[in-house]
Image (cartoon, rainbow, N blue to C red; front, top):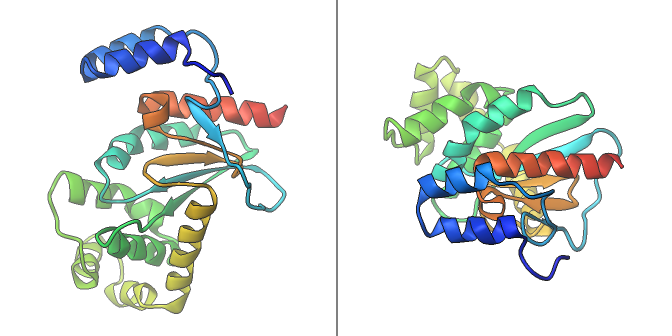
Length: 216
């Protein structure tokens, strides 16, 4: 681990105090080398086991998080260019009371194979339209208007299998030391985030860097 921040890191942290416009211009325009462990990303001290196979990128998120909403368009575009040896999945965490209903909605949609399809609509409803999706019936009504069978959603939402997935999500977040969102994990060995990398696009570049490290 590098004991002191890089020139890039010190400059970006300084620009952070100067506002978003200065940060975007100053950090994006002046890269000075690869991301640094301990600053733009961190290792997972006790790495949980994962199945052998393709590389894995996990996004830890919450539908109600404005930073997750801001990352989503870039993340969607980035996912389209992922190589065949990289798998991607989302893990919705439940770090607070307001998070848990959204987490349950995500895993209900996942059980129905519709989470990717409805993700953008849910983010837009929450962050643009101001739609209240804080309880099961409001969620069911909203999703039914968007073409999902209401009864099937409610059955999935109330199922023990969804509760199990919610528990597993919490266990994985704890194992990787995830305490905030959005966060991105690579092969359960490395973690980065827009706050660590100082920007959404920068965080995805760090993920690309970590995938290259893993290939070596």
